Image (cartoon, rainbow, N blue to C red; front, side, top):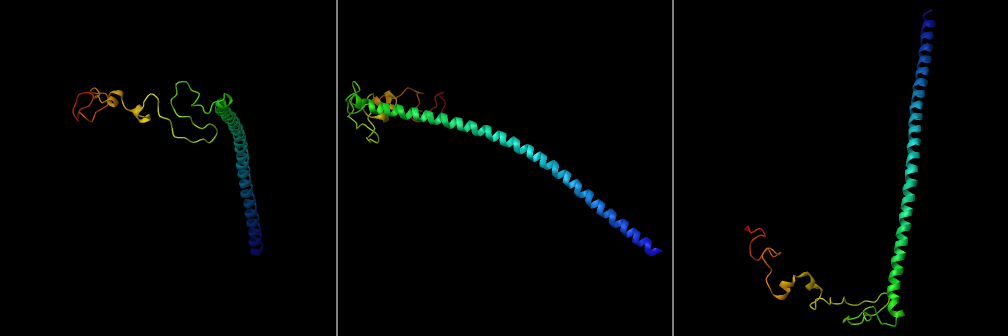
Length: 156
């Protein structure tokens, strides 16, 4: 009789083990399904946001392209204006302009013209007029190193 009891316990133990394995697998499947549902929802949100951003980028690119075309058209119009008026260059047509004539057209290269306000050139624009004429600037007018004092009168 002990053989039947051991066999019955063994079968019952095997059946219980199989049931537990199936139950654990079903729990994992339900958790996986929940994760899958959350992932699908997140993917939909991402797709919506990416589509909106792509539309904004496309709109911005179209506006930049239109702006660039307007700038190029304006540049070409200014470039062609002296030739249409029978002038050699934009510089030659300006009243009172003592700069040498510059070649017109795309790709023309010349040295930068001197500034008419400063016969010494463009570097003179950055020097105070008193200093350029040889006069000393007033105390506190930006020359802090020559007197050894700060604008507030204190020493170094």
